[in-house]
Image 1: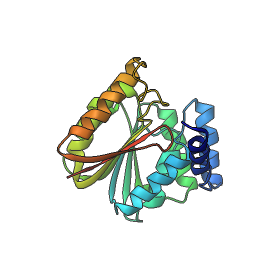
Image 2: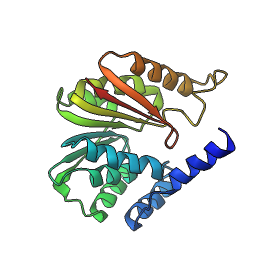
Image 3: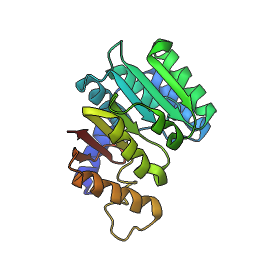
Length: 210
């Protein structure tokens, strides 16, 4: 990344103004050892949720609620966010963030469990948006489940899709980088999807189901 592009990226990441709710959620993230989505990614999530007019959203990987709050802020008051995490402490922190954000309990559904076990139990073609930010080795399975879950016109969003700039480096061959590189190409070539890679955060892969 050139100096100018690096400066522009930093400017774009720093531009969103986050309130105390998100800042406290970020503090809980660091206390739990969880890496939250960047401010730039959070802002894109809010915009995508609003632009898609999503009513039903699935989040794979709750973290401490930063991304969930951002999604909720783009959703209508009638929309429901289902968030999945294997760690009950993460879900507890996420629920605290949702409560602080003023979101009623009936707008969120927190599910404790492995996403590989939970996702197959969710209904086909019943969701408007799926956001994946979890254990990268299992991303291929999550992506295939997400495509099944999405309605026609539904949006798939994958966080950290550039794996901290390693995906673009052919010499980087560690397992998570290889998985994300393969996912990027598979989604690009999937005739069921229209997709784009955004440089926001550590890479945000966005696709719409045709």
